[in-house]
Structure formats: C-alpha cells, structure tokens
Length: 280
Image 1 (spheres, rainbow, N blue to C red):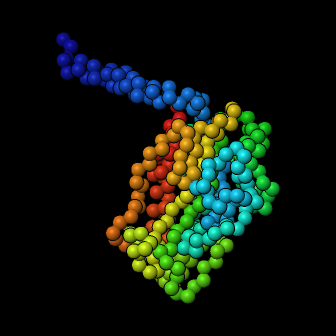
Image 2 (cartoon, rainbow, N blue to C red; image 1 turned 180 degrees about the horizontal axis):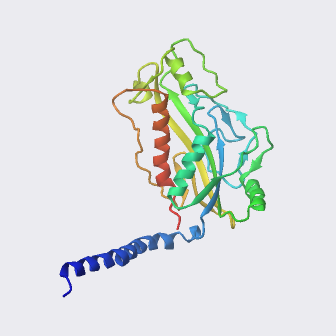
C-alpha cells in the first residue's frame, strides 16, 4: 500500500519543480515584452573615466549637467573648472580600481558579463568622442554586445573652510587622511555632520558622494538604452531610486577614513541596484 505521506511529498516536489519556475517566467514576461531592445545583450565593455571636482570638459563644467551622448568627448583634453567650490574636494582614495570593481559587481548581479576596457589614454590625448571609441573598439572586438561609458566624481564636502589656517589647493585631489588633517591636525577621524552644512559644526564634513554619469549603448546600432547624469535618468531603466543611506539626520558622527569610504561606496552600490536594469 502506498504511503499517503510519501504521495504528498512527491506532489509537493513536482509542484516546486514545475509550478514555481512557471510563475517566475510569467513575472518576467512583461519585462521582456516591454524592453525588446535588451534582447541578446550579455557581454558589456565598460569605459571608466574620473572627473575631478576641479576640472571640466569644454562646454560642460559638471558631469551632472548633461548625459553622455555619442558626440560627447569622453577623452579630454580637460580644462580647469570655471567655478570651483573650495568645500568640494576630489577624493583620491576612491580610484579606477575600486570603481571598476563596484561597477562590474553591479552589472554581473543583473545577469551581464561585464569587463573593463584597457587603460584609456592620458588627459593630454586628443579629444575622442564616445562614437569614435565605440568604432575603434568594435574593430578589435566585434563580439561585444554593448558599451557602458561612465564618468565618476568621488567628492567630499567640508561643512566650512578650514579654521586651522590650512590652505586648500583647487587643482588636485586629496586623500581622506589629508582632509582629516585639514580639519583637525594630527587626528585620524573627523565629524560627519548629520544636519545640512548651514547647521553643521566647524571642522566637519557635511556630505560625501560619488557622482556618476553613465550611458549604455547597444553595439549593434549604437542605440542608447539608458542613461544617467547625476540625479537625472533617461531610457527604459528604473528611474525610481530610494533614499540610499546615509541621509540627513539630526546627529553628528565621528568617522575615520575607512568609515567614510565605506559609506560613500555602499551608497553607490545601493543606487546602482536601482539604476541598472536586469539582463534577459
């Protein structure tokens, strides 16, 4: 005689193997139908370029001003920024290596097969548009499915200019340890101010943020699939981004360089989860 309990277990196993995947496929069907332009895109080459707070591209002073277009000069020459906010300091601790790891991790988690392009020419190179770079790369690797261009600007904002008599240079990056020394010589930490800068205490930082500008082009026809410039988004991505921590609070916190870097990078990871659409 067949054991009733065994029959029930067999029925549940069959249900799990066949019914649950079917529900998942049904949930993905609308996404696939609404975004046919993503079909077949798996292999992505990523072009990464730092945009320091003290530099600008010709005709564009900030990476948040405009999206990366096919005619955007992704490679220099850079110019000194027309207007410099001396409270905004470029952070050297967050570099191409770390940003590359974060971007590749975010893309892989969405189902893509990303890789970084080889090192780009230096800032003294002749201007090269995104279209020029895509054309040159396709000649070397015709199997690539899409191109992702990304400017990034890791920036820490001082709540006030230093009261220690230190002079801030407006044409170079700073390490987090240097910033702490600017605020309070000899210390290995700094106050991360919860309130906005106007209410923040002296010798503190009011904000730390990694600005990004990204455009995703399909290799087949260079069609723009989605784009990001600061807080602006375009294309069929996920434009709603939750309040990724840390947000403004009423409290101030002591932070060392490791804490500040972790807060800035984790905030970017949070934003990328909502900006990058899933691969099919």
